[in-house]
Image (cartoon, rainbow, N blue to C red; front, side, top):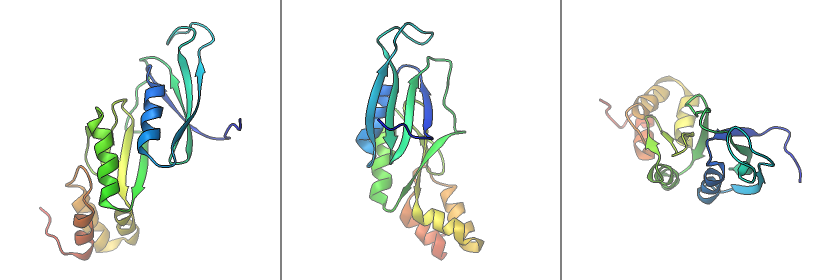
Length: 164
């Protein structure tokens, strides 16, 4: 087994395996590689329980550690998923939110374990990179949305939508 030189480590209460399996199910290029079990009792569990899960999300190596309830996720860390179509946005957003997650603003949502996700269409990033009035119109449109609507972002980029 090759151990990546750098990977993301996410702490979970006791659900690292469930979270990794969920991510592998909904995101292409994602998988669960291995599960390690606690060799002895520890502050977050007992010997033989799942302790560490190695997985990838969109090809990014990650580990999930069942560290107990002391460690909480926050918006200070998020996965940003770049999408090309509204169908992709809908599929990822709806999978996360309908599985016990919650919506937030500007393309952000949280899964049921508290991990934050930004479901971001490429067209929005392109508009922001362009700068100027186009970026402002796209940004202002995004600020009014929870789940991003690509058609509205594209209309805003062109100046074809009136924002409130």
